[in-house]
Length: 419
Image 1: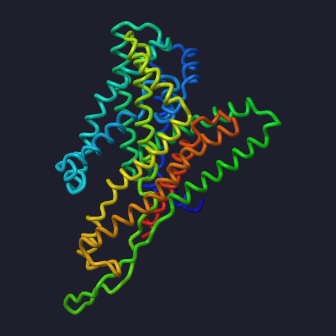
Image 2: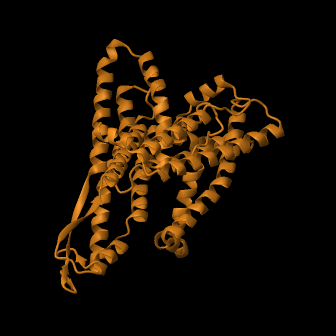
Image 3: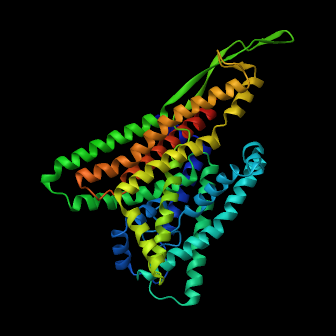
């Protein structure tokens, strides 16, 4: 509470907070503007019978619930970012630009990600509109209405991407995560009403158990996000002129979960894509294509397969994102340039090998723990039978991670102004 009061006492920070809140309000207003010719009854039935698109609604920040102009949310942008980061592992020139190109290289890399977002939004928007038309959710549209609606969807995606970048520039949270957080927060009252509508007193023990497990999951996410492995660093004494530098000991923090909430977002992006493609081709006139699409769709709807795939993808993306953001070779070189070394480890290749091995072990703990927490609510739902919170695990992970990230960045901003 004291930190919050300090934020609002500092004019620049107060203006940044109000600016971010204003952008979130603009996003929620845009999420309430539907595209034309939507059948609300058919739309409700469609989401009730399809868990994949229920997840996609949270992933897009809630814009899909009413088929708004921002229905795709940041999905195409995140997919584009994944493609660009995968390219850094294939093409050395891309890796050089992203990791060693400085601010100019990073800005150019981000510009490429934005450019990839537009064709992806066009493809996903067309695919999704065609699927909804086949399901009867969209009423028959003329060619001009099709083009207009598709243009509005692509423009909405670019608009949301712009809002996310504006939020990130204020350094009070990640724009992508905050927009998804806003969608989750706006859907929470509806989920609570749905849970209370079917509540009976003979289920009180089940609901209390669900609440206790949710608190344990939140505590686990907090512990995972805050945990770190401290690597001791010693600095040799150096004499420059009449002054002596170095001779101190410090530590290099290695977080158990360097990737934050991004593995969850990346995993959902990949997991939802086959479901959309399968739904699109399930109505195909070619028998074998329709059969394969229906089989894939049924497989994704299977809770066991979905939970296993979700767990594996979260683990893999935790490693992938950590490899992109934490480079042992670069860190080893920086420590060596400053006259530092890890006790008992020779500078150079030996330090790189030590950091790589330690990073793999630490990340394994974080990745497995993150994956377990991600699928735990689905397991709990299977035992308790409470289906009102279909997306509880993902929501909890995103909300807790976003709140912790905002608190840390707010503390850093306040400390900077105090100094």
